[in-house]
Image (cartoon, rainbow, N blue to C red; front, top):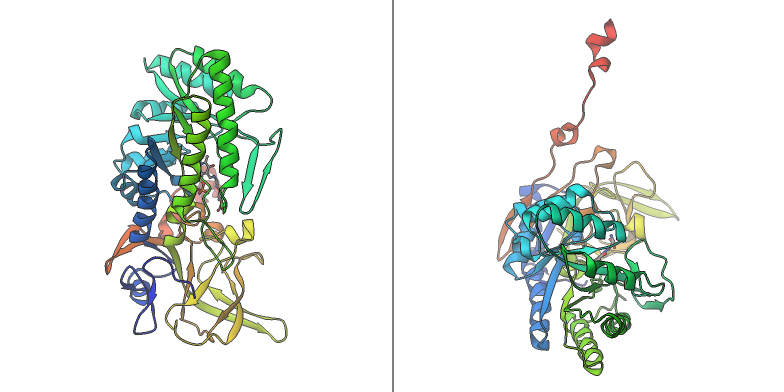
Amino acid sequence: MYLHGTSKINDNGHLEIGGVDVADLAAKFGTPLYIVDEALVRQRAREYVDAFTKTGLKFQVAYASKAFSVKAMCVLAEQENLSLDVVSDGELYTAIQAGFPAERIHFHGNNKTEEEINMALEVGIGCFVVDNFIELHMLDELAAKKNNVVNVLLRITPGVEAHTHDYISTGQQDSKFGFDLGNGSAREAVVQASQLANLKLLGVHSHIGSQIFEVEGFRMAVEKVTQFAVAIRDELGILFSVINVGGGFGIRYVEGDSPLPIAEYVNAIADAIKSNFTAADYAWPEIWVEPGRSMVGDAGTTLYTVGTSKNIPGVRKYLAVDGGMTDNPRPALYQSQYEAVLANRANEEATELVSIAGKCCESGDMLIWDLKLPEAKTGDLLAVFCTGAYNYAMASNYNRIRRPAVVFVKDGQADLVVQRESLDNIVCNDVIPERLQKSSLAK
Ligand code: LLP
């Protein structure tokens, strides 16, 4: 059994996280429950900040809040000196409501609306990562109306795509994001941005993928970005002061996943920046990264209660829990794999092979196929590990199932950071138009 962060099995044979017995958490907060190991999130943040500090480069570590955006998480990011990447008015609003300093917020997205841009201008965010020509001009006009000059990075598609162990370099990248490096649109975007009076061009952004286990893709991206920066300097006399290489640093979900220590990714990127820019006689730019998954992923555990089971002799045994694809759509969407433990009998020998089903009305609602567990009974607790990133963030109300609560645990203390949805929450936005109401139907 692989235990992350502060997780351990206590003397009662129960899983304990942040010094709190998860059986107590289930009793107090109910299940399903997202549990976040606060110390592990802080540790990850510090690994990034410490590694960058040692490189001697100027940097910003922007937590990609899409992975898990709630107010308490924004407070934590603020306390750990992180910046914040947001991609919608909802994520921006969450950050602002949490008191996150606007000047450390970066706004992403391939289709920012006028409303969202205005909101970001009003609160005074630190930087827009501009994705396309329409946005470039809209942002300039809206900033002009407010007599603002705003910082921008241009998102470029460097023609490097990385997924876990595979990285490929493609000439022309087929992507909905950013300005293409290969076909000249990135160069054109620099030309136009530099001519727009209400934009201050800081540099470029690239993001090559997610759940990446190797440094080679990042090195390739830095190399392409450097070549671009040098070409722009030589042709147009424009210098970049910031290079953002995005996120994508991998984590261990299951045995066989082999992410590198955070410092190794950071050092590889920093070394590539230093050597490439030095070779081009170009002042080292400030380096920004945007980790999401690797900041919160392995700090999250989802706790479920086991309900029914169905044994099909010679085929398989299904064990159903009180959540499913509504709180974790990743197995259904990406065939993601997870490890889990019977949290109230964690020391008992695993004697049975079971598959963990959710409670949604859909055969695809499976959380784990073929998991070895002690013989589980109704009422046992199942803890699924590594659910901190893109779980609460992607949760839905499918089948009108309520989204779980989230608690932060640390040093024996558990604090609610998101309440469980109520049945009233489920219907609170529903409206029955007058003409459908009984009184009108009677007429
Ligand atoms: N920056 C940009 C521009 C991104 O698009 C992303 C992720 C990140 C940073 C953060 O990447 P991370 O460090 O978390 O890998 N829902 C999917 C993941 C989608 C990632 C989208 N972009 C999943 O559950 O695996």
